[in-house]
Length: 407
Image 1 (tube, rainbow, N blue to C red):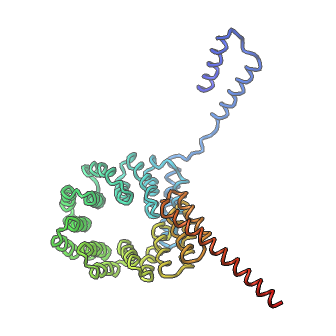
Image 2 (cartoon, one colour):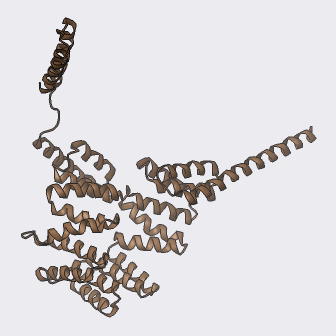
């Protein structure tokens, strides 16, 4: 009723200022306003209670696990479901964490960053910070997150496996930021409570590769490969070994290391991704398709993987399949601008459809794409449309001419 009182008070002061009494019809208007406000105040709060939110969240996450296990699964579906449970993901850190993590799996890195940063600042939820560290690498926001990691580094009592992951991401970002001395301190701290930490040795290998200490890098990588019998961990180490050979410009050994990683872990993201890009770079679309198809098969909603897969299909001259992948991608994420650009190239250069290519290029620009190259493509397409129309007109005229002769 505070709002109503303010209205009445202001009205009373205004009336006193003019030495006039309040008219009957004016009193009625004030009463009507008061009645409306009372009705608004009586509207029930339909938002879920804390207990209801937690119950819905638990039910949904149990279904998530079952669906993922059965293969009847879509990250996009669960992203939407989480948003429907509550948009107050700062208040419910588990929801914010999962919203960010699912966005990450979809390659929606900026969205993931926003969810995870806001959630962590509110909750200090360590798993959220671990994922935030990775997303900051993908979004080039490392310097914004490093202070949060430095602060968390000093927290005592974090469960050892969780702390190992936290320090692993922290030391990796320090290496990317070329702060090698600080990274070395964090790696040593990890090894102090877990002497055979594969995450620590991986980062140590990367540190030595980046600082061009190749003999030390090789020693660390080979040593750590011998430390573990876990195939997935070994696969991750062979990915680092591939980067070692890449730095030394030994391409044959680099490819062999990536393939060794895949032989140990068929679904290794880094190895499949690296080989897919590598073969695309070499123009070997047929080979690139193999590795990118593996990624898409296991991350069907991932925007980046689908986009690259469609490009590899185009390079392999599977134009119809490439077009289908782009169409599905646009249906699932209409605002992903790179899809329009690449489908435009497919339509323009390989499917002889410059008119639709123009639409895709214009859509790409409207979503914030770079104009310079695309405007040149649009100009070329417009000329192609004119040429096609001219050729059709000539063919039609020739057909009518021949028809006249036959008659």
